[in-house]
Length: 318
Image 1 (spheres, one colour):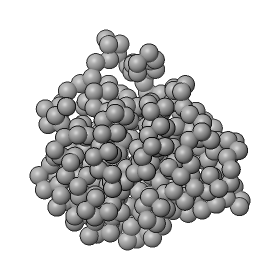
Image 2 (cartoon, rainbow, N blue to C red):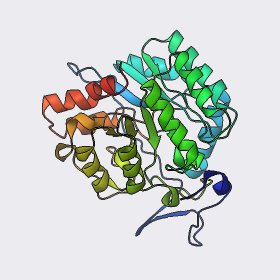
Image 3 (cartoon, rainbow, N blue to C red):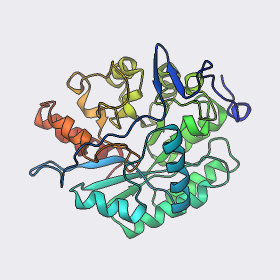
């Protein structure tokens, strides 16, 4: 297993090609381009209850750093809005509920971020806020316990940024704490989108079989993996059919933007385990791009209601 502490500062190989990410047999230049698609005024009339379950909220200075990174190494961020503007924007468009995520990129900052998120939730009751922690940091269990006492509704982690080993000791205490408090965990443990600018190589840390061992070991732990598990779509599609404690969110996977050719059709997946999310505001296209594509899929109305809001409401106890 990869040790998260020893992995800090390691750099993935980009095979000698500057500015290129290699993902198995495919390659794409970075940063990826902006998309100048037209945005809608609101969600369509008569739409069911809709939850955007993957919205990032950070303090202003951290947002600035995140956007600088994306502009250089990811894609141009179209909506450079701060927290109050993000909430006003999405709610004015007809989004009924927002699940707000953040992550600690280093030890020692999670408590401050969690207090920030709790205050956001206090000021805006349409927000369900999640806690974060840096896996393996001193006092991690206490950090999460305090966050839950502040009213935060789960935990968000990002393996590409935090470089944790899913099966390591630091993660075991996160799992155990989530189970103890009956809180869900959303963690980016799919291998993509990958960048040579991350502090570790997600292809060494992330794989469906690692997560499968975790959800088997912790059957009462509720886990959501973003981006439909990119790029191991087939494997994650199988796993949500086999395990009742695993969910996937749609973030960016429906946008026809990331250069993957094997993205599955939602009609063939377990509808009660798919959660709608966007990655707003850190997206390079219109805020409603994925909503429009969902509508074109002609899913049964019951499935659409679950994906757009019902599943998130159940997962996060909204």
